Each structure stands twice: as C-alpha cells, then as structure tokens.
Length: 267
Image 1 (cartoon, rainbow, N blue to C red):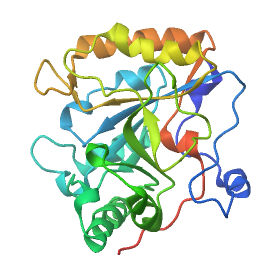
Image 2: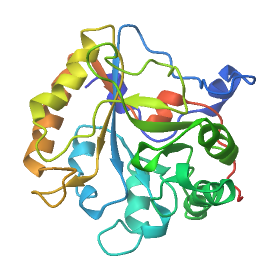
Image 3: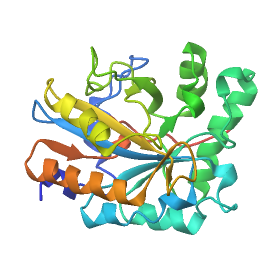
Image 4: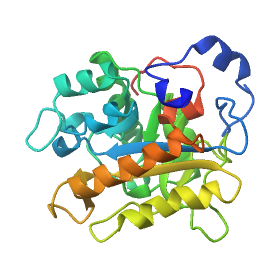
C-alpha cells in the first residue's frame, strides 16, 4: 500500500500555518508532493444517505470528503449526525455546502453569508472542523468568493467544471485559485467507469495534478447524478491499482489544500 493511502484524519497545522501566504487572496498552501504526481479526491455532495454505505473506501484506506448541508442532516434520505461522526472518526473530511443547498450567487450578501457561515457553525457544534466548501450548483462569482466563502473562514471552494481533458487535465497543486478549484464533469447515470478512470489517467499522462471526483448518489438509477454500487466498486478497485503502482495518491480536500483552521462564526 502506498504511503499516501495511510494518511488518515487531520494533518499537523504548524507546517501549514508557517507556509500560508498571508497577503494572498486566493492561493492556499498544499502538501508537498513528488512531481509528477496525480492526487485524487473522492467527494460526496449533499449528505445523501446512500453515500454512507461506502465502507469499501476504508477497506483500501481511501479517505473521502463529504460536502454536506447541515440543514438536511437527520432528515429522510440524508445522513445522520451519528453517521457523520462515524465517517469523521474513520478519517473522512466533513465539509460544508451551505445550510439549505441554495444558489448563494442569487442571494443578498447577508443571506449568502448566513448560508455559508451558519453551515460551518452547525458542523462545528457537532465536533467537526469544516474548512472546505463546495458551491451548490457550481454557482459563484468574485463577491461570493471573497465576501462570503473567505469571509466565513473556509480555506477553499470547489466548482463543478474547468477540467476538460483538452487544455486542462487536472487542477494544479496548489490550485490556481483555491476558491474556485476546477473539476471534471460530475459523473451521471450514463457515465461509464472508463470515462471516470480517464479523468485520472489524463492527468497522469499530462504532468499530474489534482483530480476531484464528485459523486451524489450511489444507487441503481435513483437520481440522474448517480453511480451504481457495482460501478463504484469497479472504480475503487481500479483506483487501488493506481495507488499501489505509486502513480496516484488519494487524499481529502483539506489534505491537498492545507491552511489554518478558522473558528466558525455567524454572520
């Protein structure tokens, strides 16, 4: 097993804090990787209950990042607070995605700040340390980046596009803009395992970088943004071969970004 798969839980903050460029608005420090290296982050959006079953991630020592909406936790079809605690204890990252899964780009500033800041407060109240954010619907602008997400204390924010396998084969490490990190297209019902694997191999073959694989549901056609259990297992089996060969590391968003954890507040 590669040493990268054994990285579990939170990393020491002393080095990350010392490396932080205080005057920079967007860039955030990342862990040092031997180049070229492709880093994959497995992400689950929205806190859907069917994502919890993926203990097979831990069978390979793969941590994941769960971007959750705190307002829907403990409701039908979503993860419970106890499940999030179990995921965190197992080495996964619990990150924020707004309280109510709303398009913050369309909100007034105070309302947008409530959705992002209060989400961090809610997660912290249950013992987590949220410092990564994902834009619902991928909707953002410069104001949202600086006056909402950065204002609320997150260290990064993820979009839903930007890696196109034509000119951009992976996000850079550290990202060009830590508050608009780029991804391949989210896998959908019709997305083949070969296509998802291609996101990783394209990065490997073009100098390495960061590949964020974002999933919503693990089920047999329950949602347009879903992948079957069989396909997810096939993907993980294949990904393990890449890690074993030393070509790929699997890390959480926080492990890639680094930075100092900021105490949540609202608003």
